[in-house]
Amino acid sequence: MHNHLTPKFSVITVTYNAGKVLEDTILSVISQTYHHVEYILIDGGSKDNTLSLVDKYRTNIHVLVSEPDKGLYDAMNKGMALATGDYICFLNAGDSFHEDDTLQQVVHSMANSTQQPDVIYGETALVDSNRHFVRMRRLAAPESLTWKSFKQGMLVCHQAFIAKRTLSEAYNLQYRFSADFDWCIRVMKKAHALHNTHLVLIDYLDEGMTTQNRKASLRERFRIMTKHYGLISTATHHAWFILRLFTKPGQ
Image (cartoon, rainbow, N blue to C red; front, side, top):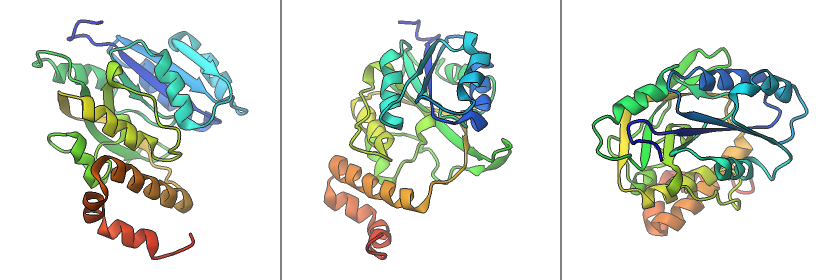
């Protein structure tokens, strides 16, 4: 265990044929001014230039796995099982830390804490494929985060939600699109201290989800909310959501 003033971060990037966008992600991790970082890259057996790109930076990647997997969350579970840091941070291919000293700023923001918080969180900026700022994420992080906060939806982007490794359980693979939503809620249920960094942590590549996947993702999210918060509460919070889900039957 690192001293609570110099925690170690395990940054996990999951890739599959993401050669076009991966380099920015790798560079943003390896150029962090904070050095207690382990970088784990889990590749699903890419057929594009992903692996030759990874090769270029191989000395900066602590753990590399390239083999077929059962999808995104299965790969994330593999990464988590290999992590040794105090904290786990998932950075998808195409996403990057907001600044070269983001992790340094995160640690600095915790300087007054007497112990390591269980969850560290912040804001997310959306960027285009040229890394230009588009807008801030529509849902802003709440001043104080609890497991009940996500009744309103995923108020903190998964990449800007950094969890203590000891609290992190495996992703539930029965969810294909929103297992991260369920995972964050499960982590928060066990967390005592949740720390708002008041920083923009992540530049999120805004490529958008297909409409079909978005619908499936919303349905899953509704199931997850019902599981954690109960049907009545979920339905009350999401009357609009139910209307939207069922106004176009059969899709």
